[in-house]
Image 1 (cartoon, rainbow, N blue to C red):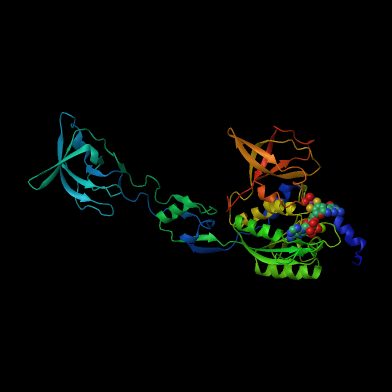
Image 2: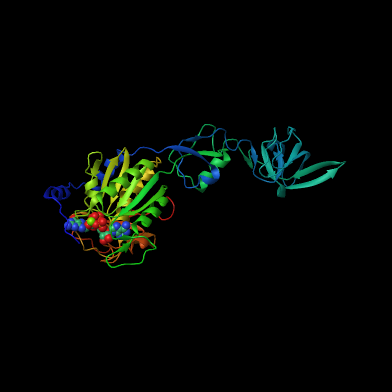
Amino acid sequence: MKLNSHTDDMTNAKFNRTAVQVPDAQARIAAHVRPGAIEKVSLESAHGRTLAEKIVAPHPYPFFRRSGMDGYAILSSDTLHASSEQQIWLRVVDEIPCGYTSDQTITPGTTARIMTGAQVPEGADAVVMLEMTESKTENGEQWIGLKRHVQAKANITPIGLEVEEGQLLLDAGTLIQAGEQSVLATFGVAEVPVFRRPKVAIFATGTELLALDEPLQPGRIRNSNSYLLRSLVVEAGGEPIMYGSIADDAETARKTLAEAVKHNDMVVTTGGVSVGDYDIMGDLVREDDIEMLFNKVTMRPGSVTTAAIVDQKNLFALSGNPGACFVGFNLFVRPTIRMMQNDPHPYLQEWTAILDEGYTKVNNYTRFVRGRIEVRNGEVHALPAAARVDESSVMITIKDSECLIIIPPDKKGIPAGELVRILKLPKGLVR
Ligand SMILES: Nc1nc2c(c(=O)[nH]1)N[C@H]1C(S)=C(S)[C@@H](COP(=O)(O)OP(=O)(O)OC[C@H]3O[C@@H](n4cnc5c(N)ncnc54)[C@H](O)[C@@H]3O)O[C@H]1N2
Ligand code: MOO
Ligand SMILES: [Mg+2]
């Protein structure tokens, strides 16, 4: 392999990086995020999507006075003197199955048979359960007997009990899941205004990278990060667009980036952001037409995580090390995908947990250690991945990670049993 002839200037530029704190890095990105476009989708396909407009109740719910029991709609005043000694009798004037309304008004001495969910007829102010009545037929007329006093409003769900007309049902930015589906269906929202899933271009850089179907060769590895990122984008509610992997060649990277920016809402790359001779992405983000937001963060793994703006779109140049790529995505890319859909809580949830095993490895940057979560006796425990397999370069522990344990830089490690802050990693679809 011939020696690379880089200049000292280039090397200096690579080294000359100002590290920003994670919250500062997140704020720099947030200042540049633009909400995505809006589209309408059918309610059937709205699960997992994010509402783009608020939904206000077009009518109260329930919309009519609803019977909560199978029984009889009555005037409660008719039952004032009813008791086990004094049975009162009411004449049945109508029968109201669900889905029908009665044109009868219930007047003193009369009643209508009614089913659960049916509209209570005019005049009636209570429903009495079938089991509390006795029935008889006399001269072709039907009567029911009652032996107890029934309170006004009994077994009637009033109009608007759940929702008043004009009430805010769902705010823009709400994730549509089962409960939201039933709200939208109840109010007849068949076409739901949602944010278009941001199209996220993914490409990996690295001459060592092999496609999945290529046989292993010495010095080369398969491109796992692209697939890691693809799943993470789906989980965050984005639409991944795969641009494969490219060799460590600046011109190819420039072209691929231009193409990816042109056709997508955001670009995520992995690899080539450190200070190595072939770390092309690190150089690319310093070019004139790219506004770099940061190229070093006081965190481990992922200290070389880089973010920039190209043609008003977010570019994330994540580290090639799988662990760093994973952490960089969760801290920066996922929140951006969520923010583009107006999610009011775009960042990972922060929990407090008991550290199960002492963590002794420290340095001057905040560590985000992959870990599992166990709940024991109602308490949250964080179990860090074993030493060595928590390293930036390690791929295998990503699949077991349920949280990132935050190890602040100012401590001499944290002993077992101490409280730590953890970032809960979402598994499966958004939240
Ligand atoms: N002299 C220094 N060397 C390094 C420093 C430093 O500060 N000074 N930082 C180290 C740290 S920390 C990290 S993290 C890495 C970052 O490297 P890059 O982001 O530039 O990534 P690469 O050099 O391209 O690759 C690193 C590693 O990851 C493997 N890789 C790359 N792409 C993929 C992929 N798509 N799928 C799976 N694995 C991938 C690659 O083969 C390398 O092993 O730099 C340190 N060095
Ligand atoms: O940037 Mo490296 O992943 O810090 O460990
Ligand atoms: Mg490198």
